[in-house]
Structures are given as structure tokens and as C-alpha cells.
Image 1 (tube, one colour):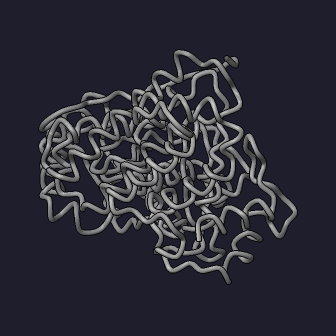
Image 2 (cartoon, rainbow, N blue to C red):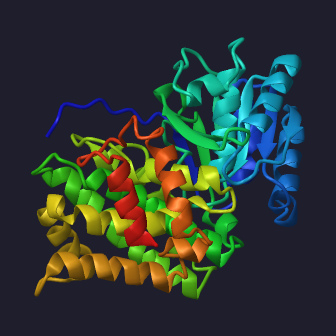
Image 3 (cartoon, rainbow, N blue to C red):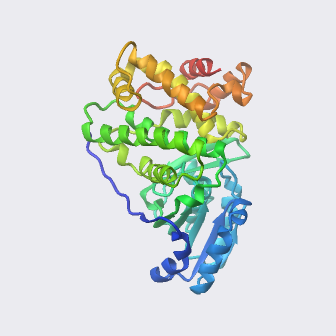
Amino acid sequence: MNNFEFVSPTKIYFGKDEEKRIGEILKKEGYKKILLHYGKSSIFKSGLYDIVTNSLRKNDIEYVELGGVEPNPKIELVREGVKLVKTEKIELILAVGGGSVIDSGKSIACGALIDDDPWCFNAHEKLPTKVLPVGVILTISAAGSELSNSCVITNGKIHIKNGFNSDLIRPKFAIMNPILTFSVSPFQTACGIVDIMMHTLERYFSDVDDLIFTDEISLGLIKSVVKAGKRVMINPRDYNARATLMIASSFSHNGLTGLGSKMYFTVHKLEHIISGAYDRVAHGAGLSILFIAWARYTKELFLDKWQKLGAEVFHITEGDVVIKTIDTLEDYFKTLNMPIRLSDEQIYEEEFARLANLATQNQTKKIIGVKELDYQDVMRIFELAK
């Protein structure tokens, strides 16, 4: 086990009707003026907007609104938010939504206290040294951004999607009511299930062996997500299954399932190339395609890990356990109606070279990982995923 530092300062308010306490929570913490940040129509259709704003007004919390966050959140809206926060002297960003809204809020929180363009963090030119606090009312179980130190933003002009990490951007609190996820569409629910699993699988498949404690947590989390995922796809209003996914979303990406390990997130980096180039591709969909191809390409590096995963999660103990486990994972994604081929997203062979050049900066860089991926490696993975 490697040396590690671990921090997870986010306070969780979990359960039914907890979102109704938002004004009370903010007032108790001494906040008087916030930015209410959200997506598009779902906050209004669900009635959540009225619940939140009524609670804010009841507790004398002044708020300024910025809606319109899209999937693969854009730096253009972040820049707009930064200007608004500075002008209005905002004290806290309240992100009401899923990972896209939270990451957009985190980016605004970072940009609000600097004179530079907030893209400088995602371009890896700078790291934040101070940020505005961020609070969350979670509506989708997926990205885990509500407890994580990561922030992924897309720059639409240059078609690049990049993330950065800093413990300063971990939210101050997260309100988590599983009922708020009942109305999430089957496709977005499935994308979330994949994303949750990937945040732990990308930590699990490392080059650090004999992580008894960490691996057991990881395998238990993946097993719980597989079970809960099956249940919510049958009954979207299954409270306990939705609760399981919501908790798993948070703890899959706050660092717990990577204690003492080494985090590369190779497949995530590869997926960011796809959804950065094709905004129509949902993050979870890109992961379901690329993880299986990456798994087949690198399986020899992780034989013990795959055998343990097969036995613990899918009860596979005979025959070629590694191949059977990868096949079973692919079949599970199919039961969620997730894409498993690039062609499912209308991405075809003639586009692979351009994407591989993007991934490797015209064959001058490699994607880090237990196996570093050069241009030819990326092309091979795309071929396996075509």
C-alpha cells in the first residue's frame, strides 16, 4: 500500500425532504447572498426550484440565478458566472443538479477569486489557491462531484474537455434525497450507473497489489451498484436502490476506493477526447464503450484483479475467468441499454486517426496509466471498440 493523504470534508444531509432545509442550513452557516446555479428545465418540472427558492426567502437568503448548464459543462457559461459572482458579491455557489452543474459551480467558485480566465485551471496552467465555497443539492447519482476534488469542463471553441483536481473545490455540504432522482430518465440513470462503477474500477485496476482493505471496499461498492442498478431499471421509484446509487456515487469518487492505490483514470482521459470532440456523447456512454475495449487490450496486466472481480461481483470461478468477467460486464452494460461500440454513437473507423491524434497531441504525448497509451495503442483500443 502506498502512502496517501485523504480528506473528505463535505457534510452530507441525506434523506427524504432534506432539500427543504437549504435556507436553514445556509442561514446557520452565516451566508446571506448566494448564486443559485442549475441546468435547464428539470428543476422547474420537478418542483424543486419552488422548494429551494421558498426556503431561501423564508430564511432571508438573497440569491442570484444562473441556469442553463448543459451536459459536458461549458467554459462559456462559467465565464458568465464568474462575472456575475464578482459583480453581485456572492458568498457561496449553490449547485442544484448533477455532476455537470456541480462542476460548473466549482469552476465559477475558482474563477471568482482570480483575474485570469477560469479555463487556466482546466488547461493545467494553474492550480487554485483560494475558492468560494460550494454547496450542492444533488439530483442525479452519477459523477460523484458532490464529494470529489475534481472539476471537468469543456471548451467548445477548441473541442477540448479537461479536468483538474484540488481539495479546495470539495463542496462544503451536499443535500442528498434519493426521491429527487426518481424522475431521472432510464438513459441518464444508466449513464450514472456506469459512471459510478468506472470511478471505482479505474482506481481498482492499478499497479499496486495486495490492497486488502481498499479492494474489499471497491468490490463491495461495485457489487452494490450492479444490484441496485438492476432494480432501478425495473422500478425507477425503488427508494432503497436509488439511495444505494446515491451513496455509491459520492463514495466512489471521494477517494475512499483508492486508498493506498495509484489513480491514473486512463479510460476517463480517453473518453474526454470522445465527448470533447462529439458533444452529443454522454460521458457514461463513452465510458461504457471504451472501458470494455481497454479491458480487453490490457487484461494481461491485471489477471489477479479480474479474477477477484469475477469471483466477488459476478460469481465466476471456472474456465477463463478473466474473459468471462469482461464479457459479463459488457453484458451488464447491454442490460442497461448502454452503447458498447463507437459505431453505436455514429463514430466510425475513418475518424479514429483524428481522435488518436487529439488524444496524443499529434503523437507527441502518451495517456498515462499502468500501460501508457501511445498513438498506436489508442488506435488499437478504438479498433476493439468499433
